[in-house]
Image (cartoon, rainbow, N blue to C red; front, side, top):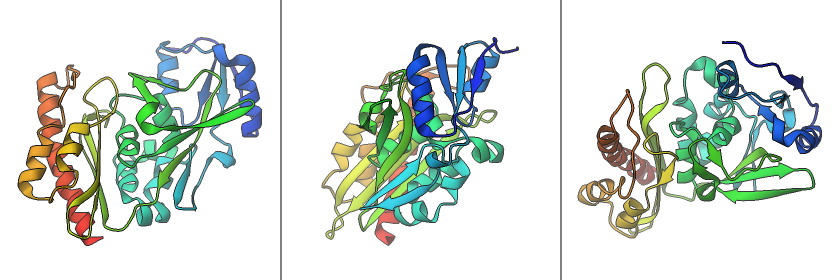
Length: 290
């Protein structure tokens, strides 16, 4: 199909983009990489009167470290995250997540912030930023705020962002010593989206017990979620095979799974428990070597 008619603006600064959005919030959409918005416009599932293209704003790109926090610009491409030495050194889970997104063409154009803001229930990044305890920076005319990843995703394709806000940065704590992470997924072959995707990050104490554990899961329900019961089973415990297996069995506790032509709800729940176990095992092995 052909998109409905729309106006197009390409601001030269974030400040200009924010002002445009303040004026046209109810009728505008932000364009970054375009992998989500453009197909929706072609199908007329989205029909904005104005498209504000922030894809060329250099101030939204790049990854840096500041006072123990990794700051990822929302316009950073998946490829740039995949090859980032800073992420590899301080939070390799995010490198693994970026490498799992789509294909080479998607990773070269798609942006980290765009994926998170779109909040597709089968996207890879939401699970990862939940697992690493990220915070999301949102900017609007006259102000900004930081939102915990745990509070950011509301429902399918819905976040706490309001119509005048732009996602500009993702803040991620630098991993403490003896931390390991892993992202594993079962991908739908045509799209690459997750039928289930599990991001696990574990920090071990000096006595080899689990000091911190976080598990983010995507592809299963209407939004990415933290597997809190799994985390509670492991917290403070010795990381034995038996404990990991018991914890993984709780990864779908209280979850209402989606079912479609690609996978039934029951199959998604089964995959989630299996892949939670595998992701935790891999994260723990890496933590022991860190």
